[in-house]
Length: 118
Image (cartoon, rainbow, N blue to C red; front, side, top):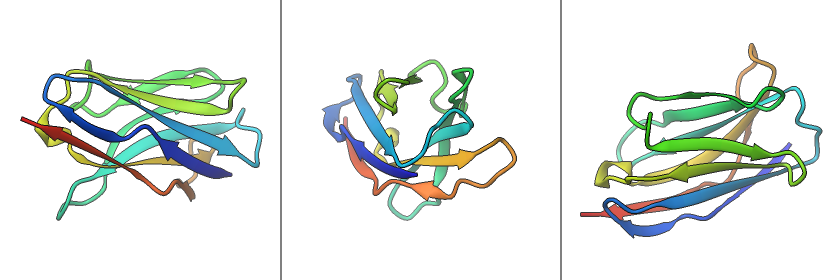
């Protein structure tokens, strides 16, 4: 499956951004879609995921209550709504996909930069 992210940008602390991840090439009914992020000099970090078939979501503790993942079946698109942004949320955000809960994430987008200033 091919993934293309969009929606990154710069925002002040406390602001909001919405990232989009458009998927193509496969039917996503058996897929798990996730968001990761990587800040400069740090390892890639899990942000959250959504099980396409059930829309069940899971979040990292660092973003719980501030970020929301959703999906649009008709558009084959996953969204990451980010509210109450903090400077420590600054990173390149990546969309990823895997087929099934037991598989590894094997499809990745190109990433989109999010910068939060204080």
